[in-house]
Structures are given as structure tokens and as C-alpha cells.
Image (cartoon, rainbow, N blue to C red; front, side, top):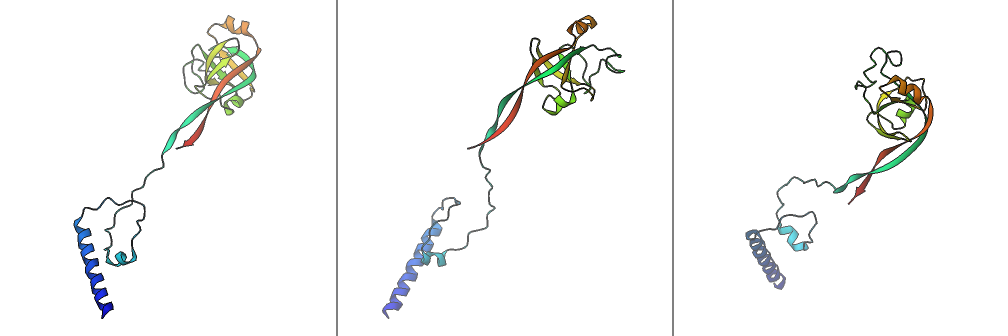
Length: 174
């Protein structure tokens, strides 16, 4: 009989605790599993199904790390003349208009990062922008656009060092 009284008393306390819990405001659910005593497990109702919220990992934006590249190239000069280019001498290979401050590059240089719009520093000359490309037979060569024919002839053929930066991306996690 003693065990019967203890069982009834346990059930009354459990029901009382259950009713008291249902009338309190519950804190929002967390992803951590709360420890629950074994006796309370049987008295808990299943929680309503809630969609799981996906939280993206917080990452710092990628940083661009400049990598300075150097190369010695053969440098020549050209003018916007049909005999030096093609039937549309005022239009560059990518469709841009020929203008002072641009250079054409050989395709091997294009493959190593000197692409359309890339700024290049040319030793003894200054900054120029890649806006044109040369015939595929040319190798390791740049061609500076000059407006006057006499300037291009005077420039001749030179070995010059060029510099440019290549931006590499590095991911940084929080």
C-alpha cells in the first residue's frame, strides 16, 4: 500500500507540474538540447513541427592580395593605319576605339593575365592600358599605340620591362 500512495503522490505532483508549465510563457526554442529528467519525458507533449532555420556561416569578405608581376618584353609601336593593322584600323580587337595610352599585347601575354583593361607600367614610358591584341604569330611582345607615324618609327624596337598586378583572392573565415 505504501508503494501505491507513493505512485499516486508522484502522479499528482507530475500533473501539477505539467499544468503549471503549460501556463507559463516558454522561452524560444534553441538548437541546444535541454536535459530533461526521465519522469518529465513521459509527461511532455510533442512540440509542434517548426521549420528549421538555416544560418549561413559568417565569413569575412575575401581580400584581394595584389601580386606584382614583371616581364621583359619586346616593345614596338604602331599607328591606326590599314597597312599596320587591318581594314578597320580605328577599332581594337575587342571593339574599343583606338586612343592614346593603349597597348596591344601578344596572345601569350594575354594567357598569363594581361587581359583587356589591365593597367601596365612600362619602364621609361609610364602607365598604359591593354585594349588591343596582336596577331597570334607574335610572342612576348607589346605594341604601343602612337598617333604620329614619325613617333612610332623613332620608337623602333626595344626590350623593356613591364609591371602589372594580379589580384588573388583569399578567403578568411570568422
